[in-house]
Image 1: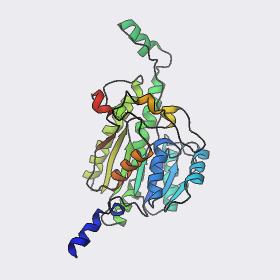
Image 2: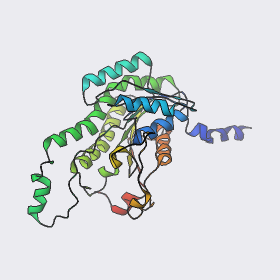
Image 3: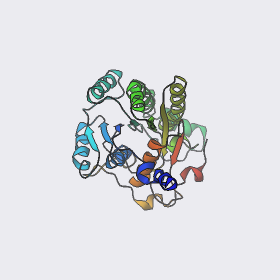
Image 4: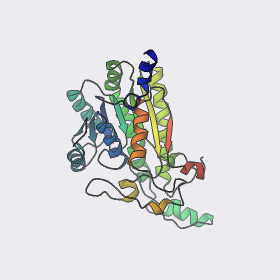
Length: 298
């Protein structure tokens, strides 16, 4: 009987249990943010989604709240690159909830990309990297503000609610998941230096925050997921009527060892693993179909 009882811990619903957890997903209106939102809500979590475009968030709540054991709640439009709006968001959450179990920092921008023309001498390379009018300090600042500073300030502001989440439920420590990218790992610039550098910074920020939180005596796990190519508005430029983006499989057959882009289930599985694994802290989970394996890292 004891052995049979021990077996129960290995049931899927126990290994990846997010039932009744309270989550906040930034950029939850499309792409990876929507994948994370669905994975959590379908399995019983109450998921608040936030972003700049309120109509997208409300559309997600309308479409994907059906036949789920959890709940999706669209919050008012928020510019998370401003501390006063982060403070307003946190106050709103505190009015609604006594704790937060899961924070997924997914919102981000790609910034400007340079053209795909090969440069073979110093003059032409300078023209691309410096003389191009789209290569500006303002672009770098915007990308870092959105992809790095935003995650830092939102996580910091929510630490008390996250710690209360840990204290509420024995055996589950609240968690922060930063969505970084393989672009912060590979050595190629992929035609957008600012974006790749910002994602490398996000990966290191994860380690810094995890260490700071741990040494401050808080029981909050902080990890990051580094996706490869997944369908999103960032990779395709648009979403369909269901807030989903599509990438032709053949476009990546020769570029990714898996011979395809990532899909919703690939990301949902990674999200549930990172959220529920209590022994995971300060780590980078690469979900890329083998792209980094094939291309190499810095």
